[in-house]
Length: 289
Image 1 (cartoon, rainbow, N blue to C red):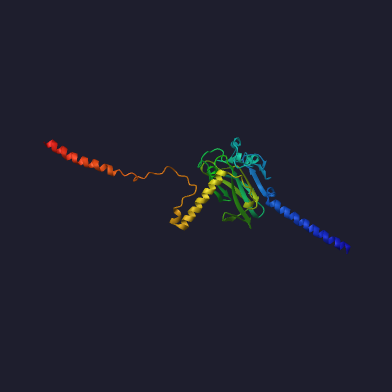
Image 2 (tube, one colour):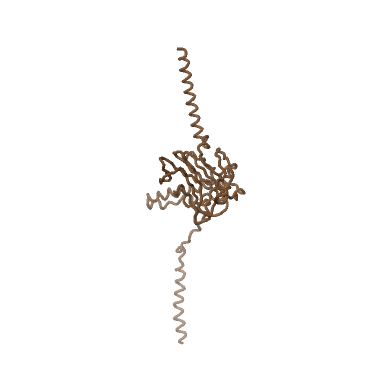
């Protein structure tokens, strides 16, 4: 009987400890404490191995000496939106004069995220480097122009969620057969060569992906784009009423066009025409005399 009295509180105490530990584990998982454990594959393209501030270990580029060209041109530039210790992930890159890519083995079903890291460190205007990204023949990023997205020497992440279930890959509403290998390809376009700075695949959802540091200029531009989209939608619903409202932060493209009817000089021309009409007949008569 005494043993039973001791056992019951002991079991209850163990249950409480287990519950507390599970809650702590979930809290750490939510805070990104388990982020590195959820990453199944990561590569620093064109560079050496690196462990970032979240504990993600990026391996040395496996394509080194096999395909494409590695470049460290960006190491001379500070990369905006990136922490100082992780700028190397945006300063090195691998590019190729034709389509190239990586193969990622995936053995478990579930929800995944592909994160592609970019920074434009060479071109100083848009429409200089434009390419697509394919995931097992599905185009998941179309006409990527890094400079147009974020400008020069600024970190930019392309985030692509996908899922694998029952031998099927689902991404952006498209489904295909999955054979255990995820092929990430950077497709040659009309403008220069495709590239990537770093990339990784992790289990999880969009909320689990670490966010880049804020960029005031980009945030303002995104706000303007959102406002313009809202106004265009309101214009479609409200008809003529909404078309008269101008965007809040729209910048004028040039000086206002002068009104051609603002100054009417026809009244000044009338006396001149009358005088000219009288002078001609007078001159004619004098010539006949």
